[in-house]
Length: 218
Ligand SMILES: C[S@@+](CC[C@H](N)C(=O)[O-])C[C@H]1O[C@@H](n2cnc3c(N)ncnc32)[C@H](O)[C@@H]1O
Image (cartoon, rainbow, N blue to C red; front, side, top):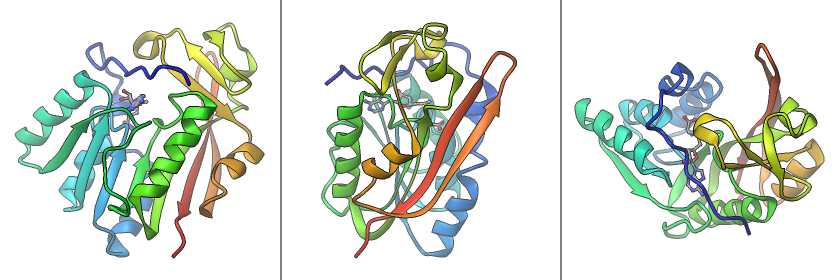
């Protein structure tokens, strides 16, 4: 399995990472109305979603490999008097008890490994989420230009799913890409509630991600 690599959050941070995610917000509100309480933000970065959930009085746990990301999150939480359980570690080895969380969020994070690693992360999440609990995760789609035009944005292809990126905060960070069928195979232990594929168009490329809500059945 490939070595994990954290993001460096010390450089300039795009505004995108500073405000709660548009796609996750309605799911978060649904979790609130379903009385889900204990939530893990897995690969939380500087914690835009964790901070928002803490403001809504969820019991929030934030986990990441990046010291720079977590220290920014800790500062922001303290400044705003928000309580968040912050832990540093590798998502390939989740340090939480079985059936601990009502829900797990993995936003643009859990694909930062190779396919074998991604399978490991998914089975780790399955272990720590309660029966009847939900996941909201994003996965990279093979319809992304970065996958289609390999070589332009990434310098190494490790397997039939994974590239190593060469850009800014993501330099040397692995990214795994899947197609729809591969997503279903990966998540076969869960019941799918909703899968969307969303394209973001930039000047020089388009990104495609799957946005997935699923449940661990009782
Ligand atoms: C694209 S950022 C997303 C941050 C956050 N989820 C958000 O939406 O704002 C990906 C995050 O995943 C973290 N990450 C990458 N590999 C990891 C690993 N093996 N274990 C834990 N976190 C990891 C990175 O350090 C980074 O903070």
